[in-house]
Image 1 (cartoon, rainbow, N blue to C red):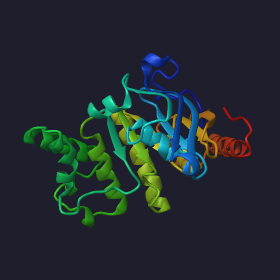
Image 2: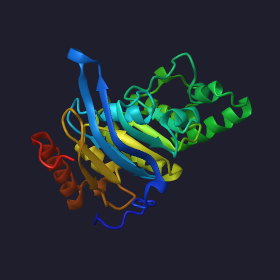
Image 3: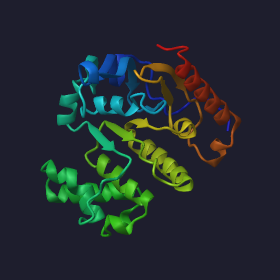
Length: 277
C-alpha cells in the first residue's frame, strides 16, 4: 500500500468557509482558586467538511474535554468555537451532532430498532419516517436482521454499531466519538475500525474521534491531532495520506508504520515540551 492522494480529503485547506469546526484560542478551566485545573489552553483548529480527525495524547490532556466543548456538553472558559457556521449551543439545538461514547448506553428494554428510533422519537419525527430511517441506518451498519433483538442479545461490537446507527439517524453534519472501541478486544476493534471507515465513506459525515491508540488513529484518520499534557495544547497535526479503502494490507504497509512512528515521536516531543503550539 503506497501512500498517495487521499480521495477522502474533501476540501481540506479551503478556508474557514468550508470548516465544520473552527476553534480559536479555546481554553477550559475547571474549578476556582485552590481547586482550579486548567484543562485546555490556546486550542486553534479547523476541521473541514468530510474529514476524519483523531485527537490523541496522554491521559488527562483534554481530548475528551475538547470533544465535549465541540458538542456543547461543556462551555469554553476562553476563546471561540464555531460549529457548522454557528455557536455550539445552536448547532446542538439544530441537531448538527451525533455523539458516540465508549459505552453504547442502549436501553435494554427497547429493541434495537426502538433504540435507533429513540432520538427521532424525542425530536417528534413521525412514526413512519422514524421507522424508515431506523431501517436505513440498521442496513448501513449491517444489523437489519437484528432489528427486533434487544441489546443484551448482541455482542459488544454489535452494540456499538447500534449506537453509531442511532447517532446517524438524524443525519448529523458532525459525528463525535469518544473512545468508542476502547472496551473491545483487539480483533473486534480492528473489524469495527473497518466498519466505521465504510460508514464514513457512505455517509460523508465529518468525524472527530478521541483515542489513546496510535495505530487506530493512523488507520482511521485523514489527520491526527496530537495534544500535549495538561494544560492540553495542540503540539502537532499530522496528515495521513494513506489510500482508501484501507484494509489488512494497509496495516502491513511501510507507510502505515512510518506514520505510526511519526505520531509516536510527536507525542514524545509534546510530553517534553518540544514543538508546542
